[in-house]
Image (cartoon, helix red, strand yellow):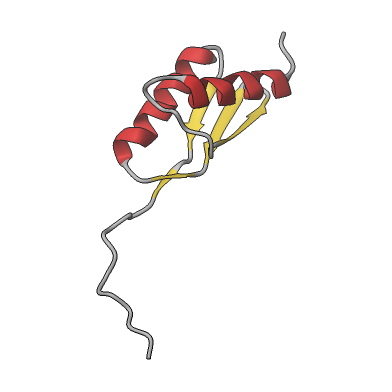
Length: 82
């Protein structure tokens, strides 16, 4: 059985290099047969794709996608400094 830190590193590399995700800011933790994805993304589709890639790379683990979707809205009005 592969050491948890190697599985986590393999999944993180896949999340960074996979053409569907290209995501560097996601933390991957492996505990026993559980894999946890944590971090923030700007959309639910990206969150789902990250979970999908993790499941493909580590199908023997139960993936917990705890990635939060944050609102990235357009900036408000200009700030004027006097």
